[in-house]
Image: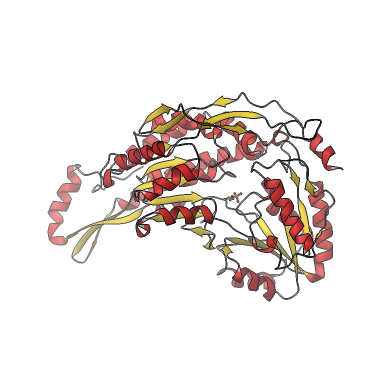
Length: 531
Ligand code: G3H
């Protein structure tokens, strides 16, 4: 089918009523912005007679200036008040109650947020709802885990001559920046645990997926005390850079790429004081051994490399296949890719348009570079469909001199590398700048045992006969080398956004300590057990 024909086949749906959102949340107020606004267009829209896409207009959001960004920071700083503010000193039940209020309102916004997820970043319908529901579950699970943490902290221990109580305390002001591919879930996986631990926040949404946060602005305002969560809209360069330069940020929480995080960290005048919680690039490899179940490997590799068009940090981004099975693998893999349906996200198609500017050109450039260096496109439907749609390209044989071998494509291009000696993929993985996850495909116990032992110190999650993924959210999510700093999961994120703090006394102070605890005057020195 020709690209023009495929482009025309992308069904059209009526876009939601445009939203003109002028508010930002600073110090507990939803302020009206009268300055520059950024228009938001969907990656979907009808194709004109000249073959151009007429992107649906979805609305607009503020492009705040540096001054407003700094006001948001000042509000967060004031609310934290060097750890003495109302929020960092609030009791666990006060924080839980605020979060529950937020969650209750958030649940009523499922339809609005999921619809905007679909229209702004072209996430297919069921994945959009799934992102919303997964985030609600994440908040509920985090609340339970937080209670458990508090229960552990409510014990007073005695070791020899020392009486002590150990809790986890907040770190300070968090600058929170999420990614466009999971603008709700991944952002909230940073924001929710950090706020629950008593930190105060300045949050700026990603470049794409901005309007979908607007239905939640009121919930943030109603649920949390002034200054605890401040939400600003605009460009990273204008807002985040100047905020970092003040030296008042204690935690940089970012999911995105290392270029942005390095640039921000470099602007902090006291980098040793800055904790980083980062989820960055990855180039997760799949290794298909000669004793693999090929059909299973094909299915998992298609899903792993192309779900949400490959725009996942956990996507399989380089597939090594053993020489003895490569012809069969490529034939089946290419056929399976060509069967995928590219359509409007409202149809729940597997493939959808790409929200990022110039993404189609970037994908084409990877293909052109690989072709110039000897690779071929193995599937029939590959290539540009429209300005925002690109049908996945399966490239083979991919070699080290090609850009796609090393760079994170974050999109619908699948490079396949042939290997004979396992040392080749092992060396390549060891030399890679990234170390998030890998997938191993084999039916043989000895192969898996050997490969697992060789991979566990290269990456942070080894998946057996299944694609890489972040979930379920109770599992630690992190990476080695340039792929991550700190660990996220329901359990770990609360720890990443806090520090252990001890109150200790000699056993001769037993009476005094007992009186402070039973007097109920201290929120910290309490043995109250949260149910
Ligand atoms: O973009 C990276 C996400 O953390 C991937 O999460 O594996 O659930 O799609 P996922």
